[in-house]
Image (tube, rainbow, N blue to C red; front, side, top):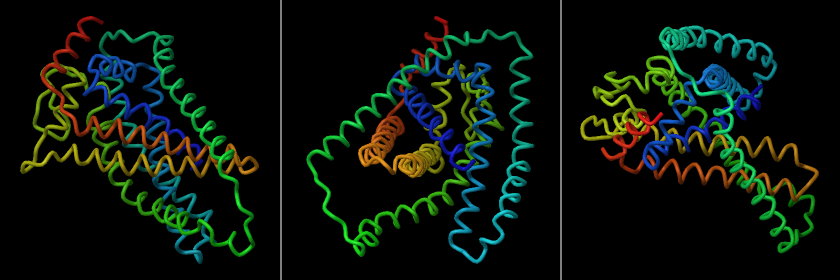
Length: 311
């Protein structure tokens, strides 16, 4: 369950970071992406995503506690029930809030994008993942052809590379602790207080700010959050930078653990899985970081308005 929910979160992370970057670089594409998020398929997916995030967060805390306190291992089964109970306790009010947004949206006549169009729009993401996987395999093959592994003695086997892996072991637990309040706060703001349908609500105050989304575009919604200042500090921009950095590195390192576990018998594929995770993490950090450090100009909001009118 921990691995499955983690995989689901990483998959959505890729879509979410790249889509949100379009608010800066391609406003018209971002408006369409939000329309896709407002489709019935992604509405169902949103509930599954929130379950995955909440369960993964609580179960990650269980893993961190048990790993640091081996004497508690005998309580693993009880701890697993506590995790499920905590997940349910959090999800009940969260899902009620989310359902209210869904019911309010469908209480009015709406024109959803056809399912086929929603699915076709995901093909570029799938193609990008396939290209990244092929590139990772090629890099691994080149490395294997150029660098010949040296025989490893029994004592070296125990110590070689362990310092780096100990660092990542610690990083996963520390970053997980830091991520929990960040990601739960993000879920509360973006899925409960204001849902995905409210992002394009004209005249609504953008969550966490005192700024009004006058145009009713998703692009202006993002601009309001990132441009909102508290004592001269863009608090939500800094919040999202911290969230991007921690979740991306944590998520792709977790993905590395999963993929390399299932490719132990093939040095070529095992290396490739590591390279794939590095490619994915760097891509998201560069694209997402460039967007967060960029500026959403008034011309971008105007382009977003024109895109909405065109549809």
